[in-house]
Image (cartoon, rainbow, N blue to C red; front, side):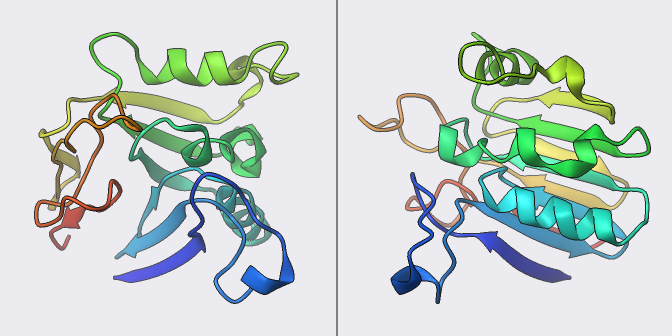
Length: 179
């Protein structure tokens, strides 16, 4: 298993030189589990990851897990180059929207006038949407298990988010068993 951080900032991307040591992009983590590509969060770091994947010349087949739908965790999605390629296969997963909303609705709202000039109908990739409830056990691929947990509600996070089973401080962490 390999892990690469493409974005670690919260709330606002910061391009200033004084933060360059840790990077200026918002949340995006690439995890390679065997031949599987798992992406956790679609912050502004997703753009750089997408550019790197596109340069590889290989078709992209990935699972993208949203810890929650605050803008800093989804803002990179419209700038993810592979999502506009018909050879790309994506599975998008979110566990904090049900029952009032689904992933496709949240993305549609973010990518609508006057906020964004293109809608999700501009995506060319084959996309599957997987809504689930925080606390569900996910099996995205044979031999792979991700356990999710609901984060306690707070003033800044009015809806449940995904947390690791052992922590209550972060909202994006997943425990995976090997493939």
